[in-house]
Image (tube, rainbow, N blue to C red; front, side):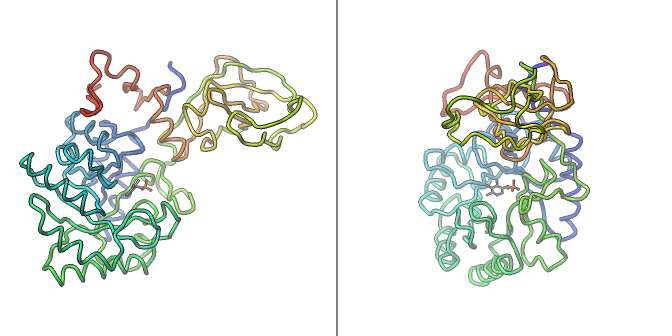
Length: 384
Ligand SMILES: *Cc1c(COP(=O)(O)O)cnc(C)c1O
């Protein structure tokens, strides 16, 4: 079988999504499943929809386009503020987008008018993480303007925490979002139907038993995909943390000294050479193996090896491990667990074959052998 390959267990993924949808439904919170971690894979999206998520969300319009072309039918939200240069693509493929800039909304309005469509806008509010968001004091004025744009419907407001600065969603900032929603509705009549409180890092707050106020939606990626809450990267009880595994093949194996020799400067990626913390005998030899896997394929720092194997170092194309007592031989395969960073790099690498429940999915290398669409058309999709 091809290696390296990323194996996706759709059954476990469906279980994670269903569990979170059920838990949050008791708090009146719907789930928009975020598909950016899997590049908008249609088979994953279908599993998520079967599990009861109310819509799909992605940061890249190209991924939403992939879903659209594959015939996946669901409300689609672009969760990164649209590029002006992609306004037409956004109104064509996404039903809603998260926005912070009137200039962008103006372009969406024009594009929606030419396409004879209506586009839904959620305004993102800055609540401390200092990534995207309108300052709370400016929200009312922005809403007033948004309500005037032709072919634009104000759908709601939202916020995003714990991404750039690690600000924890709590009763204070979530309470402020609820109060802002009340204030906007009080001024303009009931105009906000969706109050989207955040991402996977909101789960502790949402399920903690406190009042969730007006928040009625979360956008969940990592919690569904990896069964993990990102605030402290702890597994979430009842969820699978092994939906994905990355399998790589051994291309060299044998005894080698544990210490390099010669003058030592920077390594291929600039870092100081690693200490020999993993080796049982720093002056002796170890059972070293090299896997055909590297920075081109994955974030090596985000890999967890199986018991008995330690990662020693990596470069573009090689992952060096201490094989311990495992007796790894050339041609053998090793399966790693991935964190979010390793997952997205592996998904985006054309060198990594993706297999969902043993069904291959085209890599960008072999997906579209006949015709490569122009960049402006985005990607086409052939159902598998
Ligand atoms: C990526 C992203 C999410 C999902 O985050 P997870 O931590 O994977 O749940 C939600 N909202 C926005 C705006 C995002 O960019």
